[in-house]
Length: 147
Image (cartoon, rainbow, N blue to C red; front, side, top):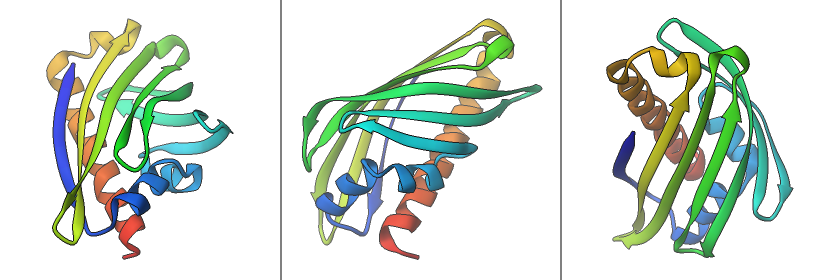
């Protein structure tokens, strides 16, 4: 599944870039995130509980940053295992561009899921992924701006 979109945030690229690299901010913003730990400057470990239709699973996974270009963006890749529910793999290119007094955050993401999760159906998976992404960026903008 592929997703692309953008969101305008009333903050500088530098502030947004710093927030995208802060495990405490990410933990607050990722729906269902129970723990986000920084392993190194380019690696995080996360524990997230997610529900897709009738399937609810706890995922534990690793996230890696590459193509790092502060404060313009990076590529983020991750994979998590949800036990018998299956797995999820994700990669996204994140780009930050000035937009008036704020910043526009663009992302192009690709997600693969497997096993039991893949049996739920693409329509439900797509709507869940869009809601998850929308919830993340809504909360992220609030936290970064300080609302």
